[in-house]
Length: 171
Ligand code: SF4
Image (cartoon, rainbow, N blue to C red; front, side, top):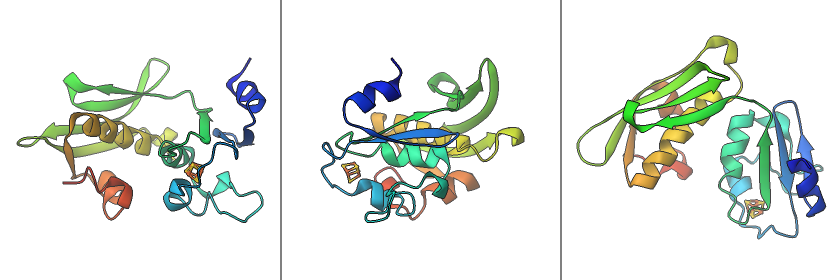
């Protein structure tokens, strides 16, 4: 049975495009509002359908759903690209099969600070949310270790600065 079939059996509704399938179960939703705060264009209460996947790329939608506290929102990415955190190399890396197609690199600066110095994805993979997933992977690793991040590269800076959801980890 596919993940979609399993979740639909549990009462989840499915919303889908070429890049992502989003699942929502109203019975589990605690109305904490993290989804609407995370992206009010994708998640708009009162609109029908209230989830519009055309308003953001799959990586951004996935990052918002990761913050749903009740797991009423879930997703399945259709993109086969894998994101791997390589602590010894101080980077998160994107692979399509065995081919490396992107990276987000950082270097330690003093105690418990990482400087994100470079984020890059092969041009043919642009527009698929991979750069965002790479930075999110480094952020996730930093949070787990109690480390804060200085986003020096322009992509990470634009993604993180001024956003409430990254305040806890921004240096
Ligand atoms: S973040 Fe999750 S629990 Fe909160 S309103 Fe959205 S779906 Fe419901």
